[in-house]
Length: 319
Image (cartoon, rainbow, N blue to C red; front, side, top):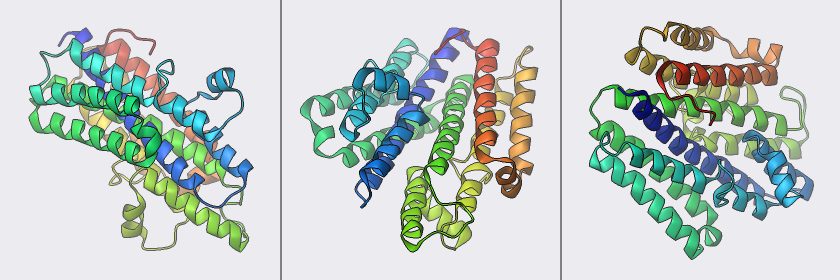
């Protein structure tokens, strides 16, 4: 496959997944902001969301003080923000258009219709009227895109590069979410918190789980009250949790093996090593050495993996 074609397919999927993850994070913050809390705590939540995407300096340069409405507009419809939902869906559509002949009609029409529809929704003010409904729509369109891709595309290199982009992006976003949201809780993970703190923490952890469609999964797996260390274990180490770091890296390794070439041995080794560490890791060891340090290193390694994939298979890109 031509490297330029592989590049467009890879980034089309990454941008679609990024739009979904941005919608998930905005949705959980929007829902959490409706709970009784001080203005300072609410502001910390929105600031944390910008930190996840590494957009806090850019936002402050343009808008100054962090405020809910400005953050939502910046992360949803600001076309000058390359990580906004509108920018991601536009980039996904442009990458799809560039390789229209490689995609099935259903895949192309799904991407194109999503872009046309999001423009209409933003213009008509549907986002402002009901942000939660808009975020659900973005998630649904991403689900539809993945389903149509798996259901209609030939199982060849084109599909493997698309899935490689999806799961590399998912690993990156889940790690960022866990890192920032765990830091947002003030009470010690294992200490004694007041009844009010415990109540707040319950809603906080529930919101994090719902942001990755993991609330029902948590109940099914652990059948217990929500505990921070188990939330971390579910989102980092469980191979059967679809949005966990382990599950995402399993898919990255699997799809890398499908497109392997003469120069990709080192890339495959790095991905396999990272996956093996997740497979044999234990949450108590991770927490003992420091969750933030662990996730920071994980993100560095995922970014490094993306650079190696770009070097081995794709058109070199600084995106």
